[in-house]
Length: 472
Image (cartoon, rainbow, N blue to C red; front, side, top):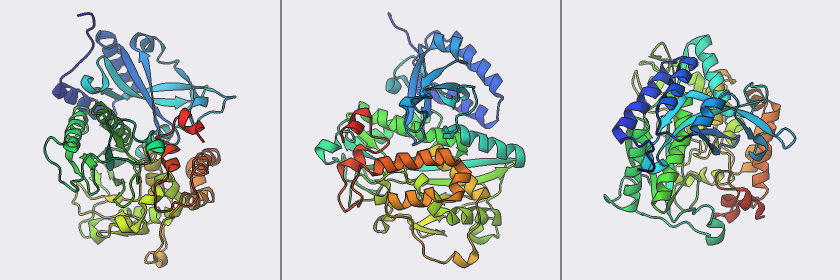
């Protein structure tokens, strides 16, 4: 053979990725992991490149492939042009450094991602090597570590990420000219025939998830036509945020190979349910779930209720973080089970926060008013820090009916005027984020109306590219 690149069976991939995940959960020292991973890369001759990922301020995933031999020599001196990434450095600042989080190492299915590659998440750094303020992955990581050291808290998280499957490749990028998305299936909730396009996609993507150590639980078609959801087990918050990015990446890649498009726009089609990313959260200490209380209201603890009431109290402040696109405000429509009411409930799915049925292990709170196009690191950091450090919703206001904004301009105003947001992000990052959102919104019709407008798709942060952005 002229080429002999790494291609591993799915069961072996799953075993290796689960071991790496366990090392993260056990907080194996980074120096140990770095030595182990670099030794593996040196010894495994069939690896040609390492894909290093990072996420911009809006939540878009970026990937750079480094030749393996170069990476082994230069892992401590990687740089990239930050001025080319929206929300990062200005042209006059330009270069940023890229560190490697060796704990976040993934072996990839070769039939989906190509042979001879492994993937690792990067950490964006300033020129002097300190964490970059707009890299929300590093911010989440630092906050979770600080809470573990100070209080022994472990942040537990699982996301239920909905998406649509559409006919043809690049259906989002071509929407501006076609004006429509074409379903591949209209079967609805839990219903698709074995072997049809939607079921084939779900089966294939679930196999990739499993191989990458996601610990799958269930997968199924969702309520809307051609809609899907694939659930997996909870994990530490940073791992969970990484898995949000990997979930969307692998879904898009699998769909592309099937000549389809996996879309995570919150509301790509009017008249049917939109896409959500219900986020299940709990905090544990020394293996004990601090959200559980057998005799508590809805069987969660006072600590958990205070966590909920802080999030509700800042619901307007953080709405833009959880719903960060023009299109996201179409989803917050009460006619389609939309969670647009700032309240908590065990049963009302129109509530921002739901209290699911749980037990000593699974007791949790579910934040429902979060869209799948949110920056997962920014959103998860915001929710945990708000739940622990925000001000608590006064008892006198807990029965009031208050709704989330129905358009992005009101959300930007609430965000920009919030002292809580500035405490979370700092003035500069908060202003950068608001500016990015305002720039996109200003390219779209100010009033949503009933019809999906091409510009709200074209200038969506997960869809736009330099070419589309200049077509204005």
